[in-house]
Image 1 (cartoon, rainbow, N blue to C red):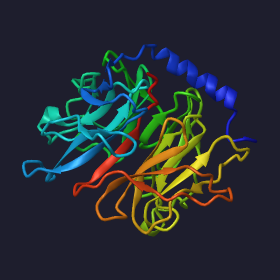
Image 2 (image 1 turned 45 degrees about the horizontal axis):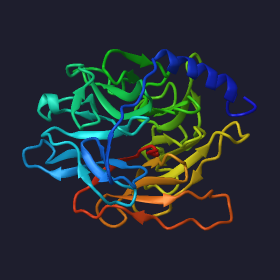
Image 3 (image 1 turned 60 degrees about the vertical axis):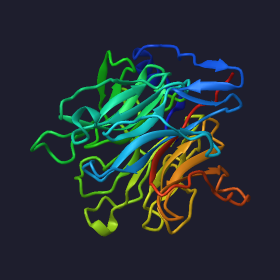
Amino acid sequence: MGRLVSILIITSALALFMASCGGGSNPVTSLDGDVIHILGATFPSVITSLIAFSRDIPDDQNVYGVNSEIFIMDPNGLYVHQLTFDPGDDDYPAFSPGGFMLAFTSNRTTGGYGNHEIFRLGPLGNAYQLTDDAWEFNATHTMWPLPNVITAARQNMLIMAPFDVGQMYAVNPTGTWETWVPTGATMPYDPTASGVSRFITFCARPMGTTYCDDIELYLKMPGMDSYRLTYFGNDSPDPMDMIYTTNPDFDSTGTKIIFQTTYWDGNTEIGMVDLSTADAIPIPLRLTNDSAEDLEPAWDSTGQWFVWVSNRDGNYEIYKQKYVDPNSDQPQPEPVRLTFTSEDEHNPEWGPTYKW
């Protein structure tokens, strides 16, 4: 391609796919004077957005010694509320487009020992199970790009199944339908779609390779082959050459993709590619530079800030940073730490802007 993609062709193709998934409206929450009620939690009505995340709570009864629960807070790290209370692991929260519901994964139906299914938290904080694959598949990394589309990765959990088999998955928030979205990849990781540009992005090992190879970033649109965006590794099974690029997230324009990668210095850093450039293969830009692990990034609803997890101050905590183009002459802003706990936080998701 002369450019990365033909924006008009791809947008039209994926728009038709997403439209076929159905329409819908967002539920309305209640406003009582100076407070607002969202997902069963109460916040001052001056808030404009929220950040959901998971926290590892020590639990001697859990198979891994910790129990992941979902929390929510404002973008300054204030008004922290716990949303789930279950012995199973609740993780990968994803806001609905209106910000009044959450999708997430949980193994609560198997007592915290089995595969993860997709659940939905309603406006009052009640949990509803959307999928039930009875140990066959394990759901990860939910995203909710459009009112009637929740995407997730589905990894095969059948005994004696190939190690690296899975699919990108789409489910209706009511659980009334579900579908596989073919990618052409052996195993798609962390799929997400843009509600604006209608692109789908995911991470996978290069086509035709094995589970011993690099994980790279891809772009997908219905009716067209997946398009590889990054070439960090050399597609070699040599462990010294493996580069892992995962956890992509679209900005508000649907053209900037933020992600984590081990490419720059061996530990995990946050990077970005811009699909609006004229480059056939966009040049990845580095957004963080620290000897600690920086991972699991997500944009805010404006694309002016991003949030991520880092262990730069000890355990894994949540940070935010204002986005500045790395190619500009402006200095990169200092990150702002949002959580201060002894437990590890994971998978932050910055919700949409509320308009009261």
